[in-house]
Length: 310
Image (cartoon, rainbow, N blue to C red):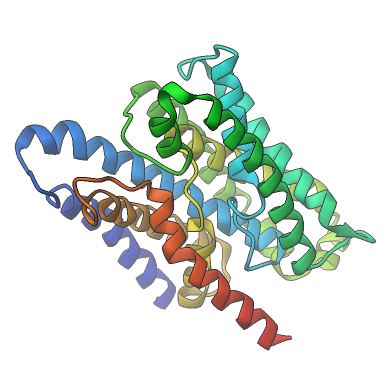
């Protein structure tokens, strides 16, 4: 009952915060609410939903509370694929765009995973360092492309670090389809998620191919994260903060974790977007800057907690 309570609490926040966010700002006319703020809120909800449950998948499968789509390079891999697709003339209304962007996120995730493997084992520290290395390298390539986009450098910068300014119905439709399909598949596979999170040896004795199942979860997390990146750019630390708080509140059950994380993630990104457009108004900050201010101290706290635990 206690676990269910938190699902309902965060479902309420998932619905209530967006409604309140619509009326926060210098102007609140009907046109501004319907044509400017409502599209932003919809995108923020979907992006937060995707990033949070993707972080839950990665943390559970890797047994690492520091795993996050942003930290291990999934987001930057997807962002690089977005840029390459744009340079190749592949439009966001083309389904191939989302296949390629998902592939970019997936390849970056696998690269971090294989770099981190030592004697077929993955240490928390090695996965973290591998992810930081991959993320830094890919981010450097992204920044080169940003610098060369001189005519649109401001808008490109905002999108790279998280923005909900551009509402494209095609992007919302394709991204939502990918995100909610990945979420539904994750719920269907929650039994495997529970087994991998606790005992991989037991999973092997049950005839479960651990590596194959991990690849499936990596693909689901990469698809959802990549869809969020295609829609809103890179928004870091959501997949780090939310699953850890959800785990404290509702335990390690996969079903509860996925639901609470997804709803809380949507609420958090709506809150971050509201701050991004109001805290320094009329200047609008990239949403990723707000989540970094929230996530960096949380990351340090988790590192200290892990160190003390050892």
